[in-house]
Image 1 (cartoon, one colour):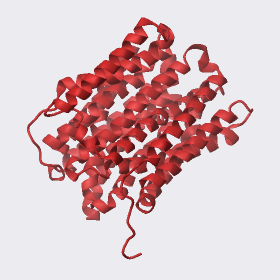
Image 2: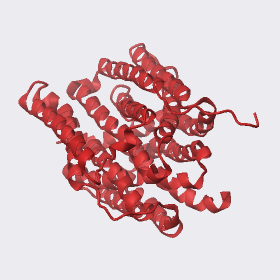
Image 3: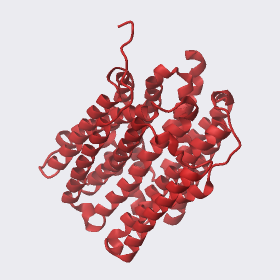
Amino acid sequence: MAGSRALPLAVLCGSAFLGAIDVQLANIAFPDILHSFPGSSLAELSWVFNGYAIVFTAALLPAGGLADRFGYRRVFLTGLAVFVVGAALCAIAPSAGVLIAARVVQGVGGGVITPLTLALILPYYPPERRGTAIAVWSAAQSVATASGPSLGGMLVGVWDWRTVFFLHLPVGLVILAGAWRIVKPGVTQTATSRLPDITGLFLLVGAIGLPSLAIVQSDAWGPGSPGTIIALAAGVAVGVLFVRRARRHPAPIVDLNALRARGTQRANLAMFLLGLVMFALPLANILFLTRIWGYSEAAAGLAITPGALAQVLTAPLAGRLVARTGHRRLALCGVALLALATAYLAFAAGGGHTYLTMVLPAVVLSGTGIAVLVNSLSGAAVAEIPPSRLATGTALSVTSRAVGAVIGVSALVLVLSGDRLGSIGAYQGVWTTMMAICALVAVAAAGLRTPEPQPSPSN
């Protein structure tokens, strides 16, 4: 079995790697993108992230539903092709508007392939070894996270930000060719012919996008301005309509039945809260290093690489530990490490510390904590999902995290807008807020009711 799964796992992990490294490369390239479009503000260019993240999130759940109905391989290959085309469009974008539109295209493909890589990997392992499967999947993303900052910094330093998108093309085409030949239809579930709810898809985009718009633009519009209030209210109203439609439609974008189990609910709530911190934290660190300490993009990329390496080393260990400790205990350990890292950054930023005494220990702690949390919460999120609904279950988990990422990055852009981008106090406020969010993650994780592991008979 191990030999027969080696090549498919390599291709699928390569796809997970490509999706994960895209986020890291975009983070490192962002300061250079700001320089390339001097007529655009930080709030406007934040849609390079948020435009991607919103459609990425909206595509996750339809991807799971489509895969459950029409076959994982077909939907996966389509998403991978769209992702590569979107990267090519980003690389040649002549303006900020075209770049944002291309990132939207890329986000559609990313939202399709991300949950399906895990859903395609899981059947290669028996149910009792799902922790190992998740560790393999997480390790591929952790390698991308580890290599992304230094690779992205090098590419931007030698050439420019467009190079990081050109890099997607040869890698993506090789993975696409491999997936076409190796990933077989036999690994998928039985398909049906019913199409997901397209109206629900647009409602989901509005429910995520309108509050993000309100957060990003509230500095320019004013927190109490009619535009901000209308966008927030409309987002809430659209969200309510989305939930009502999902409950009544025969083929909803979000199958709310998958969220009935208490453990699944708690795990997805914790994933959402983790998303608020997980993607905003490295971006805040990069902006701090480039804007406050004067690092180049290449130097900033190298500076945060140890944190990514910590994720690589921790992910396989966390996958093995979850079978012994259970999801709850492991998640609480992970969130404690992440909270300690953000608290230390907030405390040390104003104290004249150096890289070795401030940034290095903080990024290593946060990287370790994030790896532990992603493994434990990903396992808890699918522990009570039946095998025939794995694509939907994994999509719900990744969606929860992605919604948090959109809101977290939007809030970060708001806090660091204008002159605050060069204020140490603003960054300290960001890290302190992240520490408080970690406390909420701990509360959600403490309530996990996923089954605790039973001792092995051999023990």
